[in-house]
Image (cartoon, rainbow over all chains, first blue to last red; front, side, top):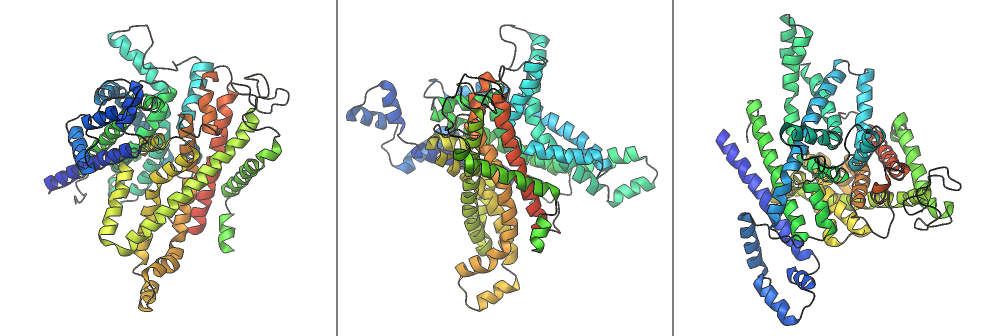
Length: 323
Length: 274
């Protein structure tokens, strides 16, 4: 039963990725001019014969289904084409930046979940209290705030005015730290972009935890735990919290796509050398293959993350009907 | 009347409504409030707010920030409302067909909306706008293309539960065509949740527009709050107002819209879970 679910889930993930690749194929055809006109533009001249030979070389003179099949099979082989501007394989350019983005997003997710759970527990202890009301208000404000602007405000306060944290980049330029000193340096640089990215989700995790805590606290097994004489602390931690955390797993998966979108903006604000700054560079230099490569890679990653959270949920909560 | 009373009963809704009307007034009145356009240079760059004749200071090339903020409101509201109307149009049509007929149409639509939920829609939006060339139209179309599935899901859910109701069966027995049943019988009953979802979408569309403009993917011929922030990034260190003020405008506008959305939700859905 579980195996069948896993296979079905895997097939679905692959289908979504294929759909993204299909979409990007049609986007390429939608864009004004084809690869041949772009190459001719770079070469600086174009007569009809040259264009024709270019189109033949890149298979652009073949019927659309043939081109589509070729495109699908090259992507399936891990070949996302080559960047117009950098003259490097797109995949190499992306993979070089990917670890930085994963690091930033992982850190932000951790901060959001840890902070959100703590805030949610505080608010759930006394629904309707001042802490509860303040949290609801705060989450409304964060929802209304452009993330890139929040990042700039954080930079303004903590880097420009207070001078506590470095405003730009992954590490101090020219310092050439190694080992632990380098890790520490990167960690310090990660605080501002990471927390900026986390704040938006922190508010929603807090609301979710609060709602789940209040709901779970009403159930029979909690009354039983109280009745057998456990302290309120123990009940809250071991019985209520553990069960209230379940929805957070699903939510983290659902929000992954939004996290990546936010990361594009926040990376640009803090000049964090990840996929987001790469996407900006690709837009600025009209490097369409690179931009589509980023779309395919980020979509694949989000799909994988969704797959992982779904499996994690099914392991954590055996009651879930796997269908 | 009862609906209106309930809608206006919350202080936050009234506050949101007042702020929103003020912003609409400023947006519409911008050409009358200021004699100069947003692109004209009025003095030295980076003058602080309160400098003679400059309520909100001047920006990196000496344009009046106050004029820019007023004209920026037009772009934000225009994009927010236009893209929501487009998204609601597509979402209602597809959601209604899927929910009413069910079957493979419904399956297909559900797959498509799931697809949009999973993929990073902001990255897709960047690709769409970049490929269409940045302009006001491409911003609106792009935002509508990535947000319509939200509406479609809601509409489909409503249609799915309403289509089995007696008034629909009665209409069918009377020989009404499917199109007429969908638009004159079911749709009016499905309106409340559609109104709530769309009111929330205006705010998020404004946020998305500002993000696109910040990245330089907005219309290069128009001044918007996002592009004001984007173009004054380098000046942030010496002139805080160039980035703080446009951002505050965005926050206040979106907050006001969300308050209105919450009020609508309460009024139209009094027993609903919050």
